[in-house]
Amino acid sequence: MRPRSRLLLVAIVVVSLLAPRAQAQTATVDFSAIDRVAAQELSDTHTPGAAVSIVSGDRVVFSKGYGVASVETREPVRPEMLFRLGSTTKMFTAAALVLLAEQGAVDLHAPIGNYVKGLEPKIAQLTSHQLLTHTSGMLDEAPMFGSDDESALEKEVRSWTANRFFTEPGRIYSYSNPAFWLAGFLVESVSGKRYADQMAASLFKPLGMRRTTLRPLVAMTYPIAQGHDDSPQGPAVVRPAANNAASWPAGSIFSSVDDLSRFVIAFVNGGRIGGEQVLPAAVIAKLSHANVPIPGSDASYAYGLQVGKSRGVDLVSHAGSRSGYGSLVRMAPRQRFGVVIVANRSGASLNRTADKAMELLLPLQPAAHDTDSAPKPMTDAEVADLAGTYSQSTRTMSIVQRDGKLFLVRSSGETAIEKVGANRFRAGETRLVTVADAAGKVEYIHSGGRSWKKVP
Image 1 (cartoon, one colour):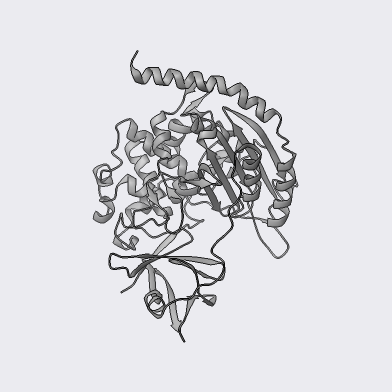
Image 2 (cartoon, rainbow, N blue to C red):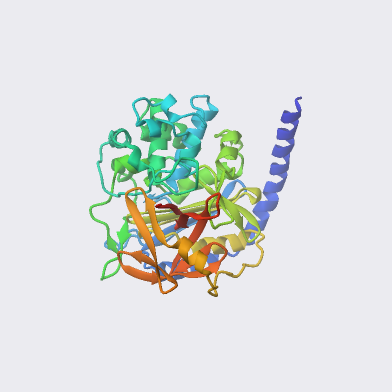
């Protein structure tokens, strides 16, 4: 027997021995705490409904719906109901592309122009690695409404020019939905199938995600939670439902916590479900490998997933937000743990509920206190260096200097800027992080996951 085979056999034996212990531990957990926190968080965030699933070991140990699927029908949420995910879709687009790479169909570090002809030259030079790590240098946008025709993905990508870039590729992490549209089009081009068909064939079917789909006309044939947004009278159904086929690869999967839990089980068990290898272990390893640091954070971005520590536990996670819906997937692979939450209000992800699930099943350290609180003095040189205009291609933001103070200028008005730490600032609720060039001068402002380049 080869050494690698011996190691794999030992790992399988260890996992099989630990599984009964993990099951015994979860049998004593009082999950009623989840009920209390979820109910309160739904009320606090004005979210009509949500579903929560918790994975421990190789099985689902908790799955439950809360609230209503529609404020009009008052139908209760059930775990099998479909919700539209938002950006948690990105981990699946990444998985599909990495799987094609493992099959030898694409090189993640080669120019995508090797596989897709006729693209704008600068776009053709991008690599899959840059797309999947948000280091493409491309601007961000997320139009919810667009064409329902699946050919829109190709038409969108082929319409792009060099003005899609705000900085050179590979320079800095900056969250970009269009980069994942392009990654999805690459999946489509290399596989020879429509993006939605390839996702179903390579991921949803092998994982047993029987109701998961990209297609609204398929989703509507299953029990589905309606998307909601805020209104003066309270949460209201989004009507018409938002759809834009060109942006599907970045945030448009329809799924349930029942189906998503199967992906989580596979992920935290090296690609295995019920003893069967449904995804190559190498795909899971690549998806969770920290590739680029996120400015101002201890976390990094892998492929379609964020990786970092939370209270001493290594986490792999992603949240999602889109018109009418929100979602959250957190996984602790070493503890073979995962929590999945889907909700039917724009941007709702129920973080406190996910925190409670972690507290019940993970060996967490005490929560750290926020050290970015008391304002700190700024030197004249810092004030002068930070002031200026910052660009994301066609969009800009400005920081102006007045009487030795700085103000963030937005369409809603001006907000005073305070320094709260090394290279860290805040303007009201907005956090800003500066990233310097080789000469030590501010080159980028990073805020809300996006980077903005200083205009000379």
